[in-house]
Length: 426
Image (cartoon, rainbow, N blue to C red; front, side, top):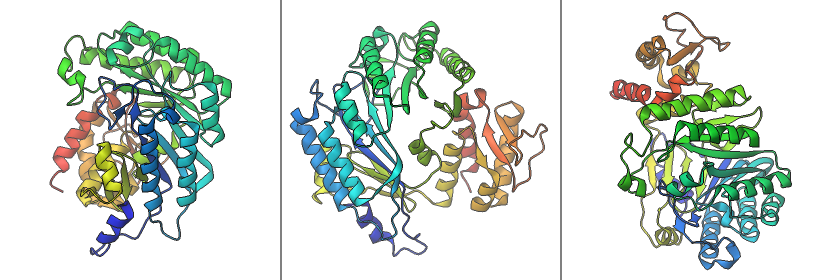
């Protein structure tokens, strides 16, 4: 079973769009040494078996993943991929040989551009210098290191498998390879985390000086250990006011240090934005392969089974699973365009909104946002991206709308909820 076989069956529908050729692919590697207490991703725990060649379970998965990729039908006018992203899970639990198998097949089947961004998520304690260099020799040219905090107590409370010493060992290995395009992740709002803890982590991060930084606010997801232990906003989780302070402090320190706050949770130095994630935020098509992964093709979101044995059976055509959901109805497309576009500092082009959804819908959006503009949470910009200072709506076919930084980003859920509620009848 493949994305293309499902889409082929739907192409007889009136108005079904012609085949697009995605330039990006996401590959899900679901294995972790342990499951973090906040995690609701599709993962399988393999304990301390960090070397892929020694783990039959990982090798079996690689075999099925390659089988799925090999079954993918592609059009004759396919363009090579510009971004490839190995996410998880912990992709650095793969061996160099296993990664080679996957990348070779992706290149053979879909093509990988010579200047493609090839990203891999890695965790401290799951790689040494020889292994990381092996990944880089295969073409990986962007690394995302999952750190989450610089306090052993907080790492323990979050269920992370590494220590602060492991973090610095991993950073030392990364720096020895000479790779420039690497990112570091932190999480705010962890249990017992104080503003002082957060400031220390941010200042430690700035001393390390990666070219990309992701800052995530803890979300207590259903059916995770954290959902059983904690209630958002109640001790030992920080209050909402405290996490807002953390967000503002990160924005202040990182932008002062020369990082561009280009997306609600992401900062980068010039020319180091994550090109793969921009594909998602700009609602461009992409392939997805592996357990729980999703593709976005021809207006459909196609999601694979989240359990490993069901995913194996699905790849082999032995498991009935309705993975296709058409998400590009006018209503869905509008709401998703607003949700994703307003995550970006550059905002949304008004001409695009008018062309896609009509000037009447655009006028309604701007009317709703006037209140938030007057509160300093939204900006209307002219074609030169200069703020329009008065409360008059900009030309319906020119300019941009964006959330302000940091306050508009902080209250983005409230702004989007209002938009969604008032646009729901369109």
